[in-house]
Amino acid sequence: MQNNNEPVILAAVRTPFGRRGGALRETRPDQLLAGIISAALQRARLPGAAVGDVIAGCVSQAGEQGANIARQAVLLAGLPQEVPGVSLNRMCGSSQYAVHAAAQAVAAGDLDFAIGCGVESMSRVPMFLDLTLGKGDFRGFDNLHPGLTSRYAIPHQVESAELIADHWKLSRSELDSFARESHRRAHAARLANWHQEIVPVPGLDKDGTAFMLDYDEGVRASTDQQKMTAMLPVFRAPESGVVTAANASQMADGAGAVVVGRRAAAEQRGIRPKARFRARVVVGSDPVMQLTGVIPATRMALERAGLAIADLDWIELNEAFATVALCWAREFQPDMDKLNPWGGAIAHGHPLGGSGAGLMAKMLCGLEQRGGQFGLQVMCIGHGMATATIIERLD
Image 1 (cartoon, rainbow, N blue to C red):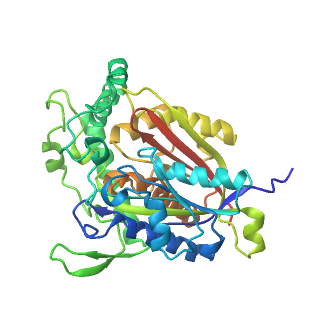
Image 2: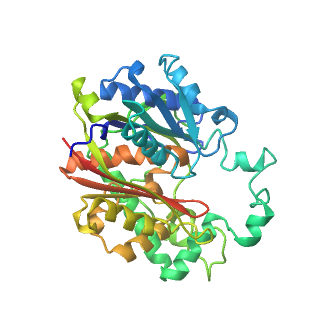
């Protein structure tokens, strides 16, 4: 039976991901989001007036990212004032879930077109600013309800990553090797000019000279194994810790946007859909281990899509920490050539609220470049959650 409200992806784009304090340090996040919304609509060949809603993920909703950044970006982008916008926070999975929400609104028949997007400027809005209330650097979860913290001893995510290494017996050398491979793959993808999902944006070099940034700034052409080995663990003592800055994601600035539409409405406008959704999943998991939700989320997504790991052509797993990717790989035993083929957040960075939509754009571009059919995107989330999406390429 045909689904008259089937949601499909019409376009998916992202900005380059800039290093924290790097090329995008002077770019406001509302402007970054406005620009990528405009670019997504241009790629989709859809007028702004056709958009029923803009749903934006953003984690630290304070300062320049406060006051409903989605609505501000809609107006900055020059869309008609009648186009609404809403901001949401599902932590690292925020803009992936924004894409889910856009697809759900279309599937429900509430509107014909929506944009799921997200942004984070970790240069201009420090992580945890919304939790610390401007009192200074993050020192712990003192502002959480005592009833919550007495029930769950929620640690910093770095400690959760260490707990994962303990549980799955992941060695420091395994983590560092994975990190080096992330950079190698990301650099190879840049040299091959595969990143057609990236929309260049104005940036500043270290001397303040303007240039167009068209690549992910954190990617290294080569990595020094000796320097990586010499790095100390972030939290634990060297004899018990394995998580370092080198085998964890880089803080970054960036944005992404995915245009979702009702298939019939898009085809009536002569717009050819690029992909359809086979599964959209969000799960809760242990708040202490915190980052292992990617495992049940993947199982649920595969079950809903009626697929197996071997059926996937592309797996985009957010590299918040190498431990997350490697524990997931231990459980599913995938073809590792299909796991983050163009590298991941260890290399290109993780702009929190911007990553989900950005990785969706990257995955779709990768499927197109490889001629693949099915892609899985899965992301761990703080306080024990995860999002997962399976898409099927159509063109």
